[in-house]
Length: 154
Image 1 (cartoon, one colour):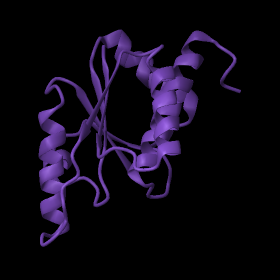
Image 2 (image 1 turned 90 degrees about the horizontal axis):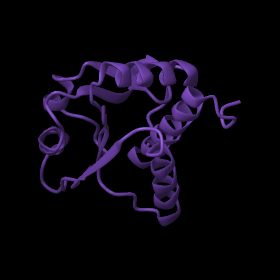
Image 3 (image 1 turned 90 degrees about the vertical axis):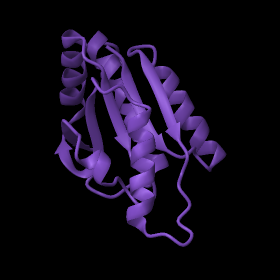
C-alpha cells in the first residue's frame, strides 16, 4: 500500500511550505508516502472550467489507475481522527494504494470528479489548497500515531 497526495501547485508561503514538509515527513514514518505536485494552469484568457480540466488531466496522469481515489472536498464525508486512522489502516490491510487529491484555486474539474471512489471533507469550509494539504498531512501523521498507540493523539 502506498499513499499518494496529489496537489495543484507548490506552497507559495515559505513558512506554510515548511510546515507542510514537516508533517509530510512525519506522516511518511507511518505510511509509504508519495507527494505529486502538478503545475497550476494560468487563468489568463480562459475560464475556470478550462483551468480545472487541464489541472485535472495533469493530476490523473501522475496517479496510478489502480489507486483508491479520494477527493478532498468540503462536501465530502466528515470523519474524526480515529475514524480516519481506521480507514487508512483498512486500506493498508487490503494492500490498496490510496490517492488523496487536492485541487487548485478553482477546484477540481470534471475529469477528476468523474473518477473518485469517495470524497473526504477536511473541514466544512473551503480551504486554500496549501492549507488543505497541511491539514491532510497532519491528519495522516496523527492516524499513524493512533494506529501505533503513540501519545501524539489526545
